[in-house]
Image (cartoon, rainbow, N blue to C red; front, side, top):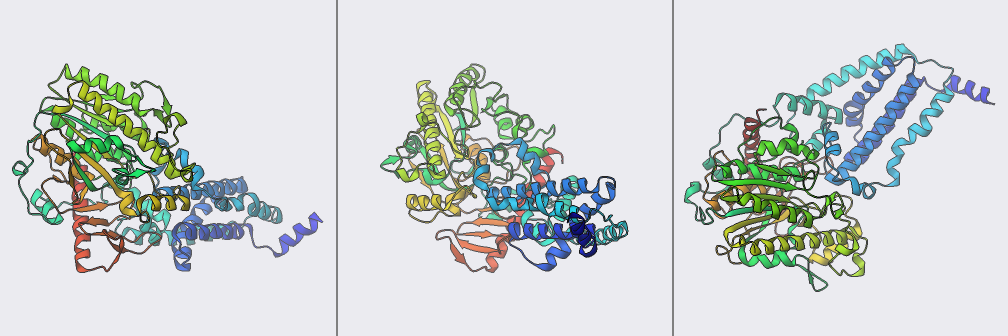
Length: 616
């Protein structure tokens, strides 16, 4: 019987090389359909498939003696790669690049949420490994691969690959996902590799003045030292608290009769609270927020900015404060090697760096010590710094409110309705409530130490926590009940910003548009310190109009203006314009195109400034 089946296979089946190419084509069709929602025959057959077929053919050529083993390993790796791309896209809403592999190993940000990202159907990508390839091998075991056909395939796929890659180089690389959809995934990686290696991505040689930047944003320029807030907090100690995953909608919000952030709400009376500031991070997430806060420049976007740092010394907030007599320190209870902070902190010029090597490993929650441990440690070091310096700048980064937001029962301070039990939203609210308590205790200790009245405390969220596939339909319903409207991009992207300065601010709430690039210039203006390098952001107290670029969690080329949000075309969706107040679709106009052009000019110039500083 076996002999008969083998004979039938030999008589009727195509050659093994042809069959494995057909299996690969089916896999590529599935990949394009799932990742890009794209079934275009032209794009699959002429753009996407030939480059993968070329890679498979090279494997066949290079491993003649172990061809089937090599083919099996190639398809296994390809299946795993497609799963990684799929999971990454579901969480970050953008395609990963070749250097995002480093990001996966440098950050455990998705580690606890992997189980929430997958479905059983995803593993159909491995069907060829366990079923199709073994069947082909069995039915064609008496047939040798035709290397005449292999050589023809190698020539054909190489020619097509050269042409499609050359055409890809002629296209602007603004959004990775859209570029990959239009030009092929492998082609997009080659173009990115070239752009990154030779520094040609979005750089421009055009010099923009501060007045030019404000004109692009819709403002009349005012010299920095002429702003109304210049120097109102001069010579004060500065404490910056970057709060993990803190979104604006939790501020001043009750649930089941309980305030979600009672301590932050309490210090609003001594604060200027900006409730319309958008995250602007790139692939580096938390580390990108640190970069923006301390340089006033956009992050790289497609790659974590920290990956481009070598032995760079950049013009930064710590360096500018050091010249004014401040002792500077940063505190983060994570491994310093994650996100290359061992490169970031020397580049920023902190006098002292405290990470998991220094902060006691106590009360471990999630990825490290609980926030209360970090704040206690910071308090002890701040007192030591004040004995050495006239003033202190302390940058404290919280960790506990990090996805997947799993809190021990003893640390759950909210009594939530039962419908929130075992939900992503419920877990998020508990983690935020915990961190809020620790911030409140830190502020209370500053008062006890006699530091509060002569300090500026800047508190802001680094990025959204509730996004991607982990937010289920059940979570969406809970959020709509909590917010009074369907959860939207404003709820997701707006982070709270509190400038707390006793005796200066009295429960001020400011609603005009801002971005994280504006935090450093706003803080410097309050302190009466003129920046020693050009900044992309501006003083939020002075300027009412703004234009913000988004280049990661929205497709590259997207922008946020005073009244609209433009979402550039992506791998799965066409371009759209939304009215920010209602989040309803609006019609694209000449003004929209002008904003697109102005945003790209600002981003390109920020990239130029960043490259000049890091010596790229």
